[in-house]
Image (cartoon, rainbow, N blue to C red):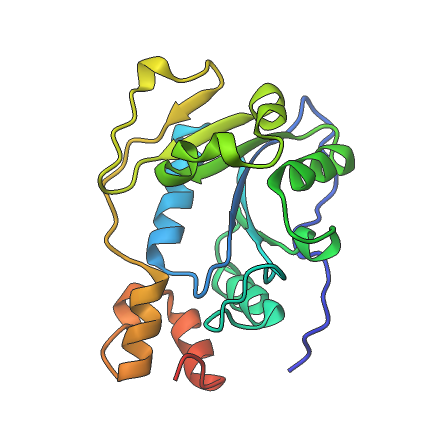
Length: 208
């Protein structure tokens, strides 16, 4: 297959007051139904026009033998979102310096799309460790952040900065790790992923 990279997310800049875009970063190895459900909850509760799935490339400083080739993961997400007009895929971090730091990604996107307003979408585990993110203070100062709690997270919304909100949705017991293990061991997994993801996995003999 053709694995050349291109920006899948680019659309004409807004002529109005600016579109509200959620930035949902991850390896998506693979993308599953929980990712889709969460993105749709973000659209509604964070008052977003679109959610951009920012596929993160392999971190050169952290070897992960289970992480698929960058372009395979990008293509999987692109295929899965073809029929989701408000969910987009982005390869922006493929074209930025590595390792991938979110402050650089948001800087780049803000410069490229000055009329767009970006909200970072992260899990409760990442929020707990947010002070250890590179230039986290810059992100908090300049961007909205929407947090989705994971199992065991106890986030006190009353103590959050004014631009940080918590998404209210049921906990999703779906993980990419479980899906990879299911594929590898021959267990059922199709109900956990979009059909195009399952077709892609089987077509390219992934995770076996």
